[in-house]
Picture 1: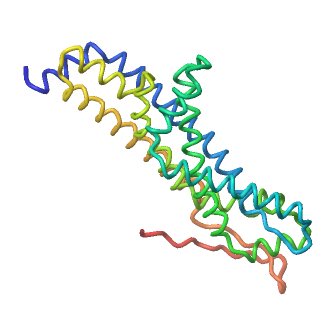
Picture 2: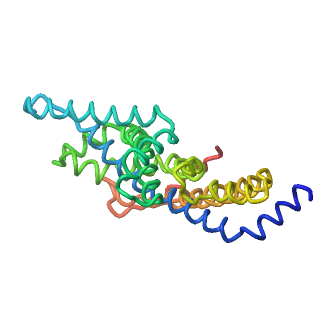
Length: 256
């Protein structure tokens, strides 16, 4: 049989296994990205807490120690491959706890994603104009109130493309977790290919499924970004000279 005939044969016999592997891949990527975003959000907020001259010495020292720990976490995770992290974390800690490989995989992806998300969110926070922070403080908001009501809504909107990209990356990078025997797409592909010693047709099926997943999710995320942009125009109501005045503002289209 030629390659296309092998593809048809393998898929017809293992389609349910490929479907199960695709489900596990999506669960790992979606859950890991969501938890990783929360980890990155917390890390970024803590690292951007400002220190003033009025702060106590204890607060200053504590902040520096926490910053060192968080910076080490970000640098170590970003500086080592997920494959190595999976082998160390799973076989070094989770195997002795009899943890299910799927739970172990989600934890690994979450901590890996959290390090990247921390820098993405921090960049989003820094991108918001400092004048808005000063304005929030001028009306009596503390750091937490300024973050939740002024900075984060704008920062999250700005970093949505990066968050979506991280989700897509996690879908593909989850393939390395086959080393801890999690039944995701790559693991199923190895099994199906090994049954007939036809790995190329099996991996072609795997690649096609990954392509369909990433393409579909990318389109969905693009639609979500457009929804977050709001309508094509909005009304500015009132002015100093005429409180009842209304001005319609039409947004410029982004041709990029």
